[in-house]
Amino acid sequence: MYKNKKISVVIPCNNEERGIELTFKRIPRFVDEVIVVDNLSRDKTALIAKKLGAKVISEKSKGYGFALKSGIGATKGDIIITVDGDATYPVEDTKQPLDYLINENLDFVSCSRFPLRNHSSMHWQNLLGNKVLSFLMKVLFLREFKDGLSGMWIFKKGIYKYLTPLSSGWNISEEIKIKAYLCPEVKFDEYRINYHPRFGQSKVWPLPVGLQNIFYLFYLRVHGV
Ligand SMILES: Nc1nc2c(ncn2[C@@H]2O[C@H](COP(=O)(O)OP(=O)(O)OP(=O)(O)O)[C@@H](O)[C@H]2O)c(=O)[nH]1
Ligand SMILES: [Mg+2]
Image 1 (cartoon, helix red, strand yellow):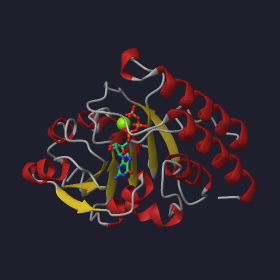
Image 2 (spheres, rainbow, N blue to C red):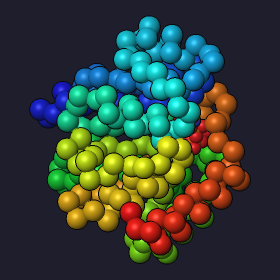
Image 3 (cartoon, helix red, strand yellow):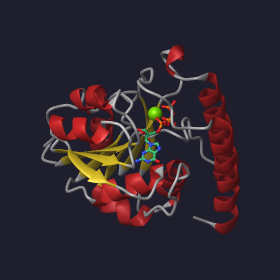
């Protein structure tokens, strides 16, 4: 519990046996439940997560979006936090963005990795892709998103019904932020965080994923969210 709120952490994982333990161990003690969504991992991710005490859910449809949606759906907390299983997002520093959410009476805080504090923590291709995508989001939706692709979100479970993402893959990241910003019932902001170098192998193919993200942004702009 944190300030009388039950806190859930959701971690989508596809073959993250090298990062899941450190990710889990960094989670603050006030967190009430940790849900690891194992998405067809062929390594020991699920076994390690179970041993550490996480609730492990198995998602059989492959995709970052599928995994996040089933993880969020299984939470019992009042406030949900999402992070990767690769030990990149500073879940140990959750208190600051969480306080920001509570004190400013916000509903959705997207944790921004930019400006980057540790330049070796992000591959230049990811950096470039993030910058292009965030710029496009600004042009298309008239709001500055410092980090349009951050995977660390902190939000009140009660507002999730306004956001219900449709994306099953990587697009969920920009979809949920744009919806949170545009939805009149949801107060959205970003909060700057640290970012650590990755453990284990990346699951992203930067060029195809980047292009797909760009098309999706135009689709959202034209069709509405
Ligand atoms: N459940 C599930 N998780 C996935 C899938 N693809 C990636 N992930 C997880 O989603 C998180 C984000 O993927 P990453 O490879 O870290 O992507 P990224 O953070 O954009 O880039 P890097 O950290 O540089 O690799 C990680 O915890 C992955 O294990 C998937 O298909 N299903
Ligand atoms: Mg990652």
